[in-house]
Length: 141
Ligand SMILES: [Zn+2]
Ligand SMILES: [Zn+2]
Image (tube, rainbow, N blue to C red; front, side):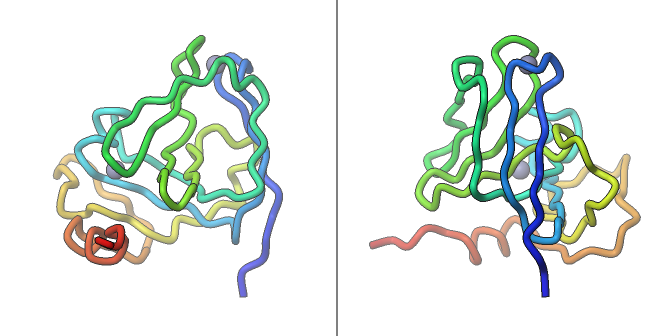
């Protein structure tokens, strides 16, 4: 059983504040080329619901693929979220959260894209890029 917990966080400059709820809380890490270009490392995220953004004016949204956009703070550049548009799922950047000590890394995706110079020691579920596309590809109809 996972339980819902309240989460709160903010960008580096404080112009954007985020609150919401998450299961666990568990975190995921994405090793894909785009996330690493965006984050200079794997993108650590927590999937959040019931989201409230303060400082929406400062959020810049970049459409990074046909199915998703990425948000960042226009004042300080902090990465804020990966947003799957069709399902309206928000994956909040874990580094924004005020409380990170309770987070447990549960999943790593695009493990076949991970460069060899780092490895996460945590024992997690893993998915290759092909497995991610097979599991989450939008229905074709
Ligand atoms: Zn900021
Ligand atoms: Zn990624």
